[in-house]
Length: 284
Image 1 (cartoon, rainbow, N blue to C red):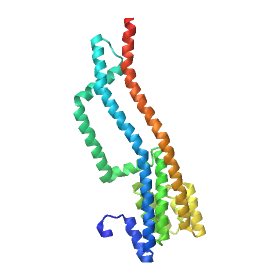
Image 2: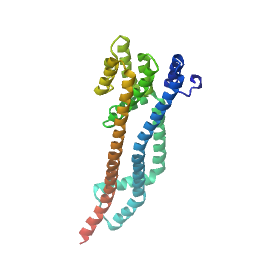
Image 3: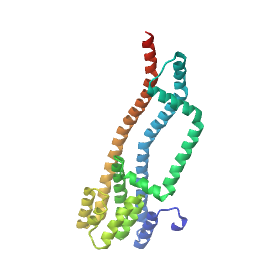
Image 4: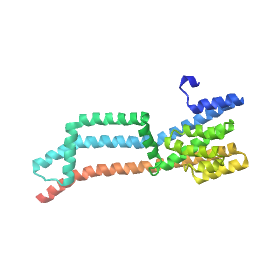
């Protein structure tokens, strides 16, 4: 499996632990459940993004249509009737003229910029580092990310501990599975504390990644000698909390984006209609 270069280090290490312990069948079953849970989590995160992305794309298309086809008609009306539009209207007319004359340049520059950003995020370590850092800093997104990280870490660590993997190695593999450089670096502090003989929950608390409730659950699991069972229960708890958070996000994001789009379109309309009313009032 390792020689194919198709499987993650987590998957390979799990197989190795299964072979050494003689529990390969159980490990494969745990891995199936793990990847099923991961796929469900990804689907939920994608489901949050689809509707906002569609709204944003539609608003961009609407804005382009207004700038290219609607505003030029008003511009001709203003010029034909000698109307001097206000500053906001002049700005929109200027943007409309620029878009009509340079739309090919705008399209290709935007496309190249998007492809470049995607490439840098995927292959440039510095850019990926900045992206991972922003995920943990931006309000609301950071709360979602901490829940996702806690759920994945708990699920992965549970499987590894059940398989008999040493706790230092288990934390190392689990932190790699999170795919976040910042969190991996912080959890390296925890691994060093454990190597020095410190207690597991205390060591993980030093990373300052997880909530106090998660650290308390770890402490209970270690003190009771049932860390794997505690991790399983904790995983269920945080998975449910993540589901609730995702549902709330879906309900709150959609009206906010709709409101913002409505305000933008409304701004276009007001900027074009007000000069017309002013012209009518001046005639009267």
